[in-house]
Image (cartoon, rainbow, N blue to C red; front, side, top):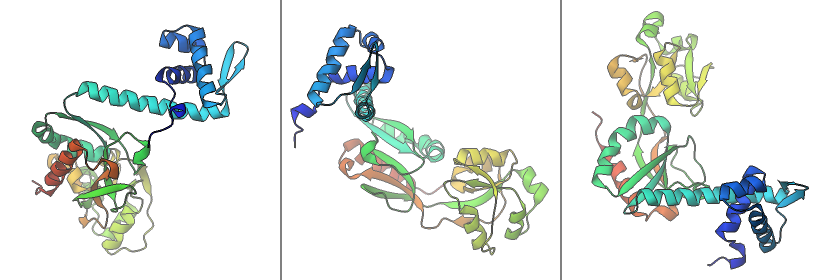
Length: 299
């Protein structure tokens, strides 16, 4: 269904409004757009006339957004940003497709990035852009084609492809383990434990699985695996980490396992694809490739 023309102002009107709203000055907007001040003022007034809403309050030689203008400015700024990004992606890759992928930072750096060369080699016309996202979001409000998701198989408005489960285990530096030498799971209650904010009950679940139910634990909080891993390497405590994400540290001897491994619960890694993008050719290719990579035996 086509939007009525009166609700689609021209790009020149929107650009003038966005620049004036962002800079708070018609003069600054005119310099940015390489127009005269009177031209920018006329375009803003034309936009207000088309919309039937006052966007600015004029006060002597200055302007300020009305309440309605503030909300409209946020929407227009984001819309112009997305148009700019789409144009940049098209210019960078005019003969193929661009895939904008939201990733979990450590998963992207440790697991996905080292394998991505294989996908790009098999699909030379496709380029991949990464943005970091730590939690689910609304695909309708973000210019992202798909996302790596860890958790339960639920994401409204998206189709999920299972990638892998994980095994987690307590890990610390060799010196820390030698100094503290926990003999059983209960001993961990007296040690500095490193926690992830994305998995607030991780230690409680591990302790319960190893015979210490209803435990109360404390310790440092981290919002990313990378930071928790480096803290463990530095000897600040023991972190409960997915073993496949710390394979390099374990191989180098920077980290050692300090307790029993535990299979993850119902949570797993998935590729989340918004329903309206399931037929996007670069995404179809990426989806098949990453599922195949995830199914490969480790090592």
